Image 1 (cartoon, rainbow, N blue to C red):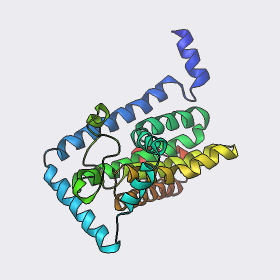
Image 2: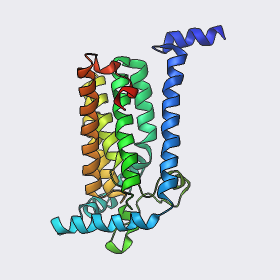
Image 3: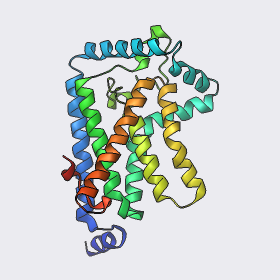
Length: 249
């Protein structure tokens, strides 16, 4: 037991107790996510109707679907299509979880602001899913959209099928890209994270999981969340990294 405590003091910036608090925050968010999904699943017809509204909106401004252009590019290479599908499934919980852990351990001064921004963006997204559940493009095959990640697989059971608007994949990718660009020091790693948001945006379009309007809404959510976290920190006269998520609610 003493060895475990000593290891925590050596590896963890604020010890095991603070680390446990961070885990509880994310478990709480996941429970909230499941709760939102249970509410949305009760009336899938609303999501389908809203999906048609997004399609109608896009058709008013463009002569073709940008999503299908991205799909054709991905379909041109099996490697590219596989990479796009992998990115879709892993860019949320896997990449975000590992990014938060790395920043927590190696760049703790950025962690609280990173965490707060991600949590705030996702809370806004969850509210959006309740108010406007929206079916993704792959649910409209008659318009030429093709499911690029096989939602009938085991992984699909864990996803909210009506969480298209706003795209949290798009929002979280932008937030992760910004913070990891700041945290990294080498040129190649900074280049990777600078390009990460655009790559994720391409992937969610290419796999028919989001419309471009969903992606745009996700970007707006990310920018608003970044702005709110920074503004709250300035108003309280504290370093941005010191502001707890509770102060944003």
